[in-house]
Length: 374
Image (cartoon, rainbow, N blue to C red; front, side, top):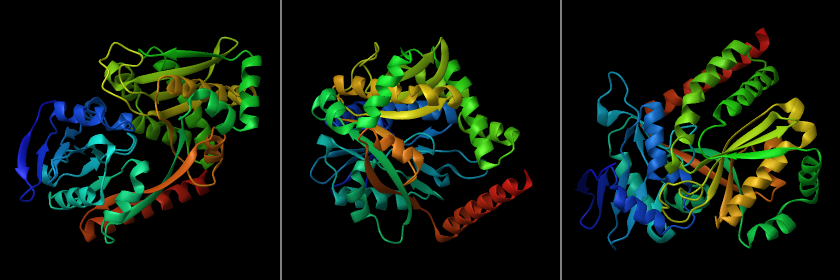
């Protein structure tokens, strides 16, 4: 990744795209709570797997500060390049949003970036910022911009793992971790991608379970899963030491029962050069529910990953999005995960916004009809 062309936004503000790697890494090195999904090598994986183009941006503010926006463009046949949709980041790849030098982000920074992207000519711009910066974004994004409410959950790791275990894990969570250990559940760590096939065998079981729960034909569910989460996606991410990807597999009586994928700052577990501090983030999970449920394997998996993150000095363990009040949200809360309500933003002309809404309504109708037919 090399630096791109620079242009002036105003008398004192400039933007360069793609963002020069040296500047990007310097900003990250000064931002202790940056997410793994905000790193340049993560963007490289997004482009390699899904065919996006790197159009990341480096902004320089009037007072000389640097801001980086991970951003990709999806080429669309018949649509001129500059009009093609932009995303920070695409669905399935985690949050993007602005990273500010020294971890500082101000409302005027967000206003500058939104104005720049609104004038970029793209038919649609999807922004999904770091949930921790929600208040700054919401105070600066114009009211006319479409909001997509979401909730993420994060375990603070300050004070080290002993404090997290004693004061943030619920008592019944600690008991379930102990029960998993007594049941003989063994956790393996993989930093090379060796457990990718194991994860996808468990993921196939999860897809079948979700299809039965939602009344979706199994063949349709498998096709949808293959399109959204192809095995090559995880294989590409896990095979690149610079992504900081670690797979945790739980085994009982020698058989895999559950697995999770966690992203760490690069250089902690591999030969990749360390690029500064940052948070850890749970990215994917799958299980054999019949076996994982009674062994409490998922509790032991997350306990192990949280301890690894705390021992490595990560400030937080991000557990991703959940529907408020859902069983998944309750599960995450058992580890001390704090709710972070935030929004994604769509910058698009009214006609495009209406088309997106119509497509969502059609998708919901199709799911309802499928449920009635099976």
